[in-house]
Image 1: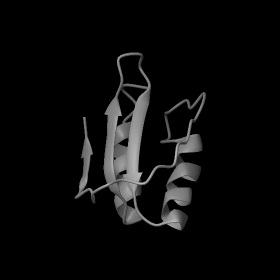
Image 2: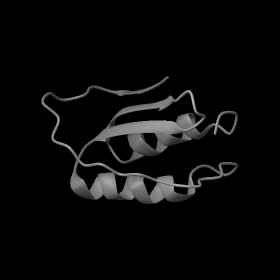
Image 3: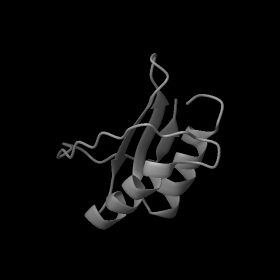
Length: 78
């Protein structure tokens, strides 16, 4: 998904929802997002990810819910 500003748009969407975490490119061209926040806000972010940014072509989405041991501050892109 590189080149379609998915990570930057994911960051913007996460911040609008009050989420913290990161979005990073993986070697296979996919993007991994880790977000922390309320269940409802995470669901909103997940719904956004199903379509992504304007030029993104989302071909799949895997979601894994986990309890994080410590809070994440901010939202980064890598």
